[in-house]
Image (cartoon, rainbow, N blue to C red; front, side, top):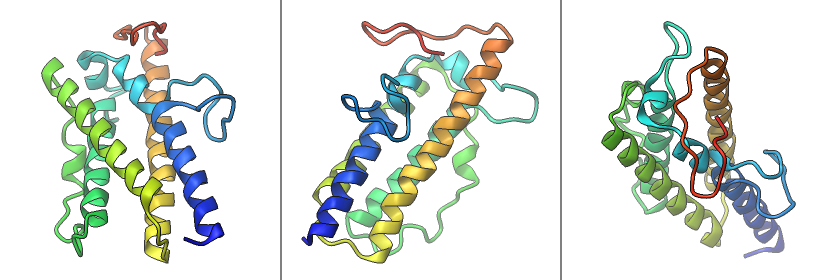
Length: 176
């Protein structure tokens, strides 16, 4: 691996960690220091909050989480060697799960955590960065950050309405 590839790989790995798990230590490039990151943020929500529309016609946190899970699963299939996992991918279907039960919400969060970890491991261990791999990895950080921001906007809208469906991860205060 070239020095440039190594620098790119470390920076991107750190960025994905920051987005999914919150900033490590004092370095924060996308989120604020101390932010819980996407995975702990959604862990602090119950199924009712994840299923609530912030306003009529708008989608839910569950739909954003399902869409991210769908995209990461496709990327992981590609990284594992599948030639074109995008062929036949139904992106519209990834937005159809707008409501979840407690069990479905746990399964969805667990799946998202698993796919995120698999993708981060791929980024952290890849030794050859071509244009496609670099674009896929960079777009994952941007795409996930976009949906995390949308989730935060939904939470802000729900809290203005007085909805409280949050639960805190162990040792943390609810942040929704």
